[in-house]
Length: 277
Image (spheres, rainbow, N blue to C red):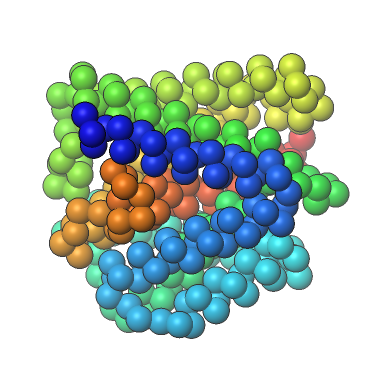
């Protein structure tokens, strides 16, 4: 009972801080997610046994030149292509190798094009409009999709789960849990669209219901993949959690693994929608 209470309180505090920063200003949003990125990066470096001060410099440079003050749209597009390629390559490693090979160069590649780039695209999503105006509603909605997927997957998997999804990587994940998470995301997408239609009709017109349905599917599939990839990294490192910063939850990487992996694919989808609509 005490563990559930601690887990709930730390989770509520985590959500409250994120939502507060999102709706305060672009600067607060960037500041908070830079801090989250630094902590997540430090946890990831420990998991892959890499000591690198250069990684933190690249994180800071990426945040400033590719997100806060974008110096080149072409550079962002190139980063997007490379990031998606590396993420899909990690998926291949996760599925078809007993152990993800992490030689020195690959460690740096994943640091830059998986962790750092994931945060960069996460912070680019709320400014994806023609005038670059900060729109926190979009990134909050993406987080709601992720949280809905995780919550429904946990509840359905715990109570109804019988068929293992990928037992050798994550013994607790089930097919029923995955389907429950997908349904939860779809419900959240429907609710988000109707909320935007009521409070922000212009944005609802720009992103109709089908966009939120597809985005819910993207978040559910790629979010699950991101969670499984992190589970495999932890299994290789021989640890249960990536850190201890969140009582009852583990580390920040444990909480953000889904959205870090998903963010470039969500960004790519929204980019396509914005350019064809």
